[in-house]
Image 1 (cartoon, rainbow, N blue to C red):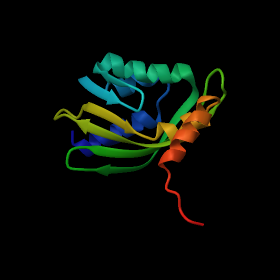
Image 2 (image 1 turned 45 degrees about the vertical axis):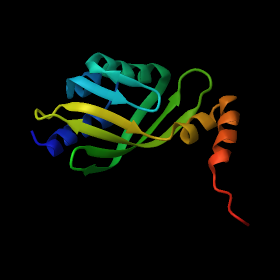
Image 3 (image 1 turned 180 degrees about the vertical axis):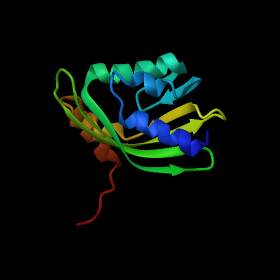
Image 4 (image 1 turned 120 degrees about the vertical axis):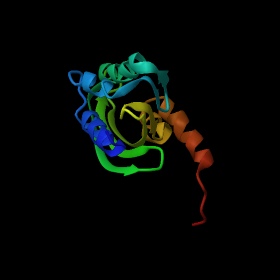
Length: 147
């Protein structure tokens, strides 16, 4: 299987991910897969499954839509938007834009899935309490332009 064929299969599983289809995504992962995002780094298929199972317990109706895909020399890059709503309090609506860096082995299985997205500006600053602190911290790094 070529990397683009494997990437197309992975994209399809990622965009159609539900608790009932999670096994389809996990089946495309190598036994030694590494998954990383701004909050987690896990190794192996069990950890990979737990990441998405946890997402389904903490988020109502999470959906990924891939808007672009590109092939590099060593990885496939998927640009995506994730929508949903945090379960429980606060009932925060999610709209996250990110990019996944996906590496494949010679068998077309995913060996690395690394998510790149800005958790501070897209999530943390929108939450009660911690949002106030996060917004203050982010202001320290913003360029101040003359008016």
